[in-house]
Amino acid sequence: MTAAPLWSSDELRAATGGSMPEGIAVTGLSIDTRTLQPGDLFIALRDQRDGHDFVAQALDSGAAAAMVDRLPPEVPEQAPLLRVADTLAGLAALGAAARARSDARFAAVTGSVGKTTTKEMLRQGLAALAPTHAAVASYNNHWGVPLTLARQPRDAAYAVIEIGMNNRGEIAPLARLARPDVAVITIVAAAHVGHLGSEAEIAEEKADILAGLAPGGTAVFPADGPHAARLAERAREAGARLVRFGEAEGADIRLLDWQGTATGSRAHLSLHGMRLGLTLPVPGRHMALNALAALGAAEALGADPVRFLAALEGFSPTAGRGQRQAIPLEDGGEFLLLDESYNANTASVAAALAVLAAQPTQPATHPPGRRIAVLGDMLELGEHGPDLHRSLAPAAAAAADLVYCCGPLMRGLFEALPPGKRGAHAPDSASLAPVLASAVRGGDAVMVKGSLGSRMATVVAALKGRRKDSPA
Figure 1 (tube, rainbow, N blue to C red):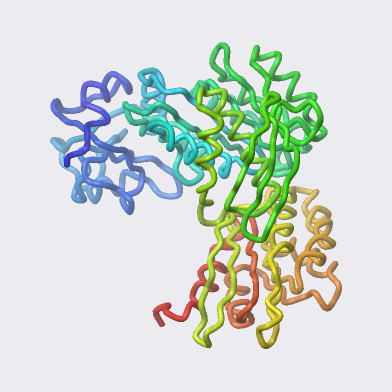
Figure 2: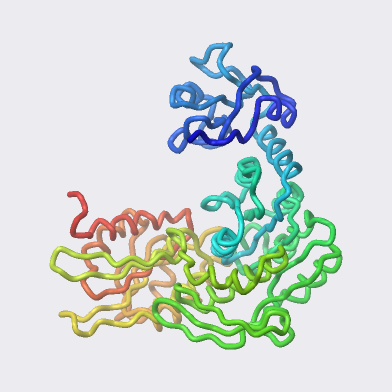
């Protein structure tokens, strides 16, 4: 069955102000030839490499057309090209046009911790109720947000946009582009504090998501923590309906009780005074709080809260964000891999350590299983970095039997551990991976966490390579 057109050539020209031949229809958008599907519009962005160098390959692979701002090498003049002044600006214009034509209800999610998980909870929960479109992976930056918008199917009833930042002033323009009906701030923590200087400044930047809020929109934000009052003030200034979530008295969505196990959790919550049950197949109190944020957004979008919570009973985290996997070994044993490798800051590392601490040991194995924390550097912390890394040593020592570390900042944490808790330290993840892979044994529970730039996925790949059926 042929996919319905996403954009016609007339629509592409009108949205971008560019020129292209008549009669072309595209069924998707791509910025990467490795994931391009036949019928896609390939957008030649410039990043670490210039996408124009891959236009010929994209067209040979079945792209219906390519958006360019110059004639690419080895591409004839008569090729199906959408010619614009600048491809990134063209993508932004396409995203704006997609938002303008959509009748869907939009939520935008930001935060220092939990934004991708909350986005995924919204995506999976809303999709059980009506056609839902959401960002893939963590497409939350200056090209990821417009790309997500431009991929919006015509029939979507809900859309969930993730918005991130590294520096001050990045969230507001993306929020204005997304123009959400609901803006969610998950939590404010010391991520990117090296660029913004303080948590207070991070809170101000996160609150800039309200700059794009549609008239009559809703702000969902934490009721707990030192920045709650300022977030509420910013929400009122934006004319938003306020929905606070958390454990504080007076929260509009309040976590009343929580019982966690190694594999999931059960809780009761109050939604505007209505008592509801929450069951999640993923462990951690932080996951329950993410679910409260997602529920607040879903209810504000018009979704039935009971049906939404029922859908979350089947929630599955994405790779690098709490995914659990049992790895069978050649000797008949197996170890548990807790993949938290995508990113890290102090709040998310503490939450991941709490999940590791909840994993049962397996004393029946010989030798007995261990809880192992594998930690890579938390980046973009500036002058605060060394102290923030060392501050996690007590939590790491309490949660883990052994701690393996990589990176210069994690050396401070490693040296602050009791000697009996020290597994090994290496300068980088590539050096640590084989050391850890050879040390892990049946019965262990291994949690891997670090900033994206620390490349902890390398460690995860090495651990998965221990699987008994892995290719040699």
